[in-house]
Image (cartoon, rainbow, N blue to C red):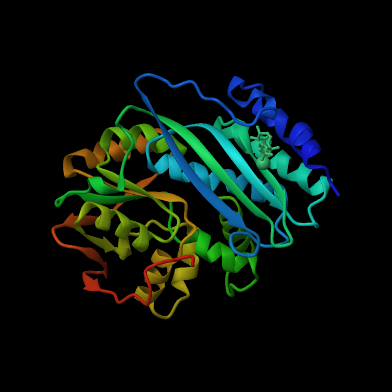
Length: 326
Ligand code: ADP
Ligand code: MG
C-alpha cells in the first residue's frame, strides 16, 4: 500500500512551487489573499476511469487532460488561470509508479498553462480511478463572461475545430474505419489531449456577450447559452470548422447532413462557443487570431427559444442534442 502522506508530501507538495497559499500542503486548508478589483472564478470537473478516459490511457496524459478540461471552463469565462485543488481516489492498481507518472503529467501542464497546486484531498477506492480538479482563475471585477449575455441580432462563433474529440474517442477505441493511420492517430491525440483555448480570455472579456465551454457538444452548449439568455439560436452546420482529419471522415459519409449533425452533437471538443454583436465579430476574430486561435462565425441569435440546426438553409433533425451524464 502506498502511504497517502508520502503521496502528498513527495509527489504533490512539489507541485505547489512554494506558493504561500498552499502552506506546503501541510495545513488543513489553503488561504488566498483577496485581490481588490478582481473576481476569483471557480470551476470543477471530474474524470472517472471508463467514463472520461480509458483504463489503459497513460496517467500522465490523464493528468494533463484533467487540467485541460478544467482550463477550458476558465477560458470560456474569460478568466486567467491561477491555481487548482486536486481530489484523487486511487484504486489498488495505482501504486507509486502510477502516481508518480500522474504527478509528472500535472507538472508538465501546470508549467505550460501557469497553474500551481494549492490543496486537495486523497483517498482510496475499490472502484475506478476518480480524479477531480477545482480550478481557480481571475478576471477584473464583474468581467466574467456568462452564458446569459446573448441578445437577438448577435452572431454565434466557435473556436478551433469541432468533432475531433468525438471522432478521436472512436479512433482510440479502434472503432473508426476508412481513415489513414496518420488521421486516426491525430484524432486519438485530440481526444486524449484537448487544447484549452486559454489565449482567448482577453478577446472574450472585451468582445463576447455570452460564452460557454464546448464539452457536451456544440449544439447542446450553444443551447445552454440560448437557455440562459432567453433567446433562440440557429447554427449553420455547413460552416462548422473542421480539421483535415474530420473533413476526410465527412467526405466518406453517405449522408452529409446527418454526419455534420453527428459532429455537432458529439462532445469532448473543449472549444469555446460565444456570441458577439455584429460590429464586434471582426475584432473578436482578429483578437483570437493574434493568440493563434481560429474563430469561425457559425450562426445567429434571434428572439424565441431553442436551437435550430441547418445545412444549406434546410433544417436538420437531431436524434439528441448532446451528452448528459446521469
Ligand atoms: P484531511 O484529513 O482534513 O482531509 P488531508 O490530510 O487530506 O486533510 O490534507 C492535508 C493537506 O494536504 C491539506 O492541505 C490538503 O489540501 C492537502 N492535500 C491532500 N490531498 C491532496 C491532493 N490530492 N492534492 C493536493 N493537496 C492535497
Ligand atoms: Mg483529506
